[in-house]
Length: 173
Image (cartoon, rainbow, N blue to C red; front, side):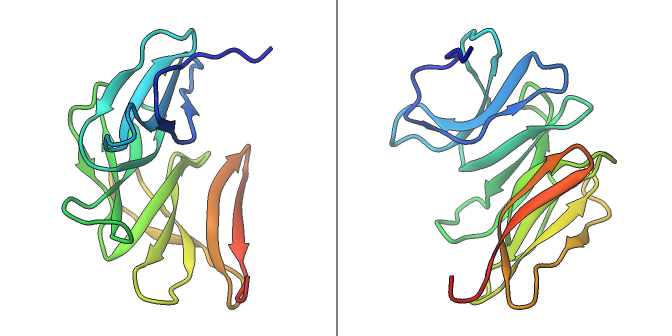
């Protein structure tokens, strides 16, 4: 049976459940004018607590060691600006940027081998979205999946078991 475990937010993004199934992390804003921050609640519905304050955060997920990985719009930038992946400890301390460049790095998910897959789209006009992978410490960034010829990866990645899914957009819609 569905059960409501969270109230009092103007908006939230996709939630991610911890590996032990006890906690949920999500990007959300309490009031419409608030920045989007990383929050955590327990699956039993206890009060949500902020993990990462300030800035615009996107798509948090748990790493196997308990840290959290998330996208964050680069400080001082606005919509259409670069976003980078960051990690932090469960309480929000020890924030560390793990991707760099003039791109939007978003939607991190943990692969079965422990690496983080994410969608990267360069900020250049007409640039295609691609899936990259990086180690949780920021080393070893590499192309994971190129879109079909002329296409752009615009959704995902999503992981189910050993499979990685994504959505492509072909030219012209």
